[in-house]
Length: 201
Length: 201
DNA sequence: CAATTCACATACGAAGCGTATGTCAGTGAG
DNA sequence: CTCACTGACATACGCTTCGTATGTGAATTG
Image (cartoon, rainbow over all chains, first blue to last red):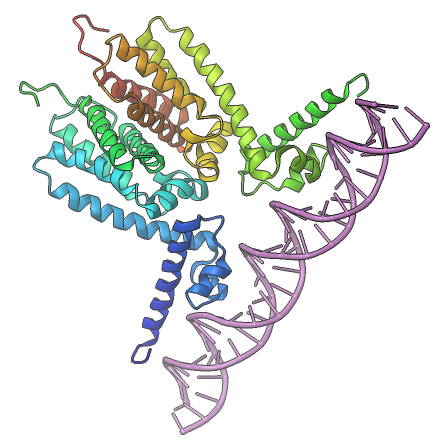
């Protein structure tokens, strides 16, 4: 509480607001989250929020941005562990599905995000995950591992597929089983884009 | 204004509210639509709305239901014109993409719907379009036209693919061209699920 | 024809958001 | 060292909007 420089205090305030907003948005959704409530829980008031983020939507954007950045990092780490480019791409998609099961991501990024901020691909942070999928497809296409395709369009579709799968899983009675079904289905779907090889799998 | 029985008047009031809400939700979105405003434009007050639909969300549900029913009919009509089962299925998907370009459908069903009502597949009206896709897949599977798959999971993914494609198109600079790219991409994607035949297409 | 029901309007209270204003701790110039 | 200033945050206010509680008049029923 002492020994901190001014700018550290400010950054801490900002971080507290971000965390409180993130928690509230994840737990009760954007519309239900009262700024008075969650700023108070952070030991602050709406004054601080308006100072740092302009308005409620501004805070929401910052929260989405933060989560999206975390997702991108996690996807990259995951893909890096894969044995080859093809499996890396598959892991991107499956990773996306699995992450979408986390309430923060499901509710904030996938459910409220599009309603509040519009098309995910044109968010201020330019949704890293769609980009990651498209880049993966570009690599595969360059290596001749997939059939000729429009990678932009296909990336959108695969992102949509993952996202819808995730909400399905989240609402299913047996989520672990649904995860299996979804991942298997996703593999099937993407497998169809693979270029016919002499070998097989 | 005369010669109408009482129940006709009531139905008319209900229809007016439904239409006014639908218009407002489509044009400015659920959150921005003021009940006082659009009921007044229908020559009524909030009192009538609460009487018929319980609350704002209730009206929204009714609107979604109505649009969804229209979509289902249109998809069925479209698929019926296709020369064979395979093409019928493709037309379902493409029809879904094209319909998603209409502001009413895009904004109400695809954008705000999931945020307000949650998982589309568990809506009161049980989203007819996802069902249509799954039924189509079931038929193809029974006829041995597609590879073995989990039709439920795959239907969700194709619905997600169509939906994301549509928001992409809607936000693109050249929508007609984007429609072409999206439909071609969709065909490619679904083509990958086709079972290898001796003949071709 | 009187009583009741029902469709809708009006009136009221409670949040919640955004802005305008206040306050107090840091910071830099002389 | 101190005085003016900036900037971080709190407080106060008004406006909009939602939901409910109540009122009213027309249609229906016995």
